[in-house]
Length: 407
Length: 203
Figure 1 (spheres, rainbow over the protein chains, first blue to last red):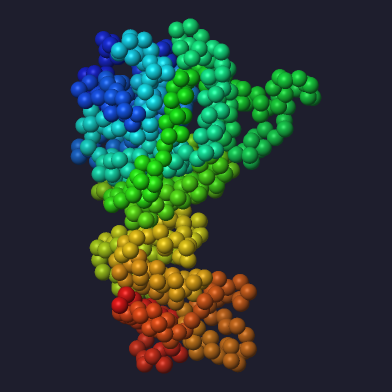
Figure 2 (figure 1 turned 90 degrees about the vertical axis):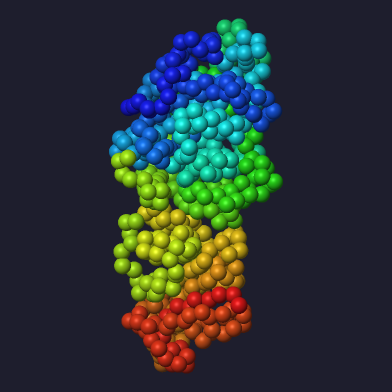
């Protein structure tokens, strides 16, 4: 499914790159199944925190082929715990692609029509530079010395990747949750490079409640004695319990009360009666424990601190004098926003706030609220109404751009 | 565009008032048929606002730029003169504050195009005068207790409001019950017109 991109191949060799030393096993597997670029060698990335980062590595995956006039590129921005393996078996977990409901032959984002790119965000742990990487100044892993990155930094790194691939602009930037934040940042920072933008189930800033949940997760990680001040690799340990608790907490926010009730109710796990102890009596407990323990196998605890922080810091209005509409003044981009009725992490009103701002900027905007009881995670699931909306929006945008079927 | 099929006569009249290539906002765009027509045949940058979420979703799935919104509250978001035309077809009588909606339309658009049913049509008058019941006609098909139409007016009422607001009537087309334009003096038009389409601008 991962077809040749026709992009520059020279610096995607795994061997011989100083910046690749000290890879974890998961990173090696990931990088063996995707491409990567070493960026910022000549011009370091100016991060919001003031640090200049470079060189740095961005791992990315592509599907489909860039057409002759380079007008069919689609950038998928992944959410917090997903990555560049959008529509293929994951090299670490062996699970199907996280958005293969949307991406694939005959699907809404068909590689036969679009050149689809998804890059692992800066600060993440599936191949791109993050706290796992080595600090060139010390030769040791960055860990907590890694600079705090923002959503805007992630987007700048993606823009640098596009420069590297020789792609002037994007037919569409699409993403849900943290991916949706990146989409908004793209539209605000590089309006001329974004023909259409689809921010799904997201917000223009992280709410107090969302920051609060993230803080619980981070505190769980840092309270784990195995965390060792972030230097756990040097001690050959993993703060597995802390990271698992962080995941369990976050996972609850991705679901809805109805979905949990429908899925589990008060059903017991492999037993007929209450155990009068603290084993996982209930199915919902067992489910969460499973979510927590499997997460630890694929995600780095320090990276979790950094990426959740990036979401917390996101405040698009704040970056534009407190007026969200200013982020979109004169925007040439066609927007399509989507929210889900049962999403309480990024409720519909957050999308509506963005729509109001886009209206105030007289931008071209569509907004659809999809009826679903599956909570925030609905955007990752089989939601026919979401697919219908996206298909129609992309078709309209393709017509406007003069993008033909096929190539 | 897939749904640019023939459109309702009153919508066609509205479409004919829109000059090609501009920007238009259709408030209460329903299934988006006018938007699709304007985008396809007039190359208009056509946007829509619709109260019903199902209507919005259907429009967007057809490639139209539509958001869920309410004429009474959501026109305020748009900047001055953002559109060449702001269109409100068969919706004015269902708004809570028709005068404010009109004012907003003329602020946001260089022109406003409004169509509405005429409550002084002779059938309406007869029903009320001789039937003694609230009128139900083709263009006013509801029972008194379930009608969304809370601010009905006659063609003359509407003209009076325009005068009062200092709004210039650029065009006024009165349609008979077969949706054909009729040409009569105002007094008769107010009697035989079943609906009217007005194009307005700020004076």
